[in-house]
Image (cartoon, rainbow, N blue to C red):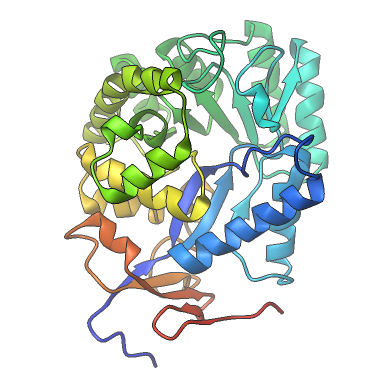
Length: 361
């Protein structure tokens, strides 16, 4: 037995919208990028208690490789659910990331999805619209796919039984993705009342990624946010785009929360060991209670990945992925930062009180 001495036991945390660091292949060799991604995933688990991740895009299937390495027991690491490349059109969203695969025409998307399935992905990520970060032609108010491309992509995923993470940023594309059968809507920067109704009617998840619009230097409200926003190094133009989007993004997050839309916590930022913790702070800053935020980062994180029966809560019969923090996160969500223990499969793998950490098998 372990005496927690008044500390607080929680399920392990989840971040269900992540990417590896953005390093174009020309500036860092692929093996180095892959190794760095694994290091960052392990650091997030050992240093921050983030026990589960859902990837929203990575190149060369490095997320598949690390999922397999963790699942085999070769390395001690978090639960990882892989997407491989995210798919978009030629001239689509976030092409400079190195994680995008440009497709055109219905068969182009069908072929790319089949390639992802062949390479072992867990789900398919489709970037249906633009974003806040990008060149002037990559705008979150615009869609990229033709109707026949959308239908083909969704049809082959349905036929093969693969869930779709739908990057959808404005009402038209949010509604279309829901109607076609998306498992989750990522971002939802701009929505309307019908979007909320459809999310509820079709029981679709929303992953709001508040960090994309609300972590510029002028919006920072504490030292963690200030350190991140300053270190992010965004240009003035990108900060302006984010700040212009922030109020509407916050409005629809709050409306979805109030309506009871299913939401899970995903950050879409790096470094991974800080990302989920920053996103949790933004949830409470935007009106979520600490309890709602913890639910989004634990129970709902496991559920959106399809493992809610095994993980995400502390219950008899479930896998014991847990963390211990010194201070009560229900009083202040930032108390999740007072990490003491990380427990995976019922075994302590990191003890911040003593500095002990497991070695790999």
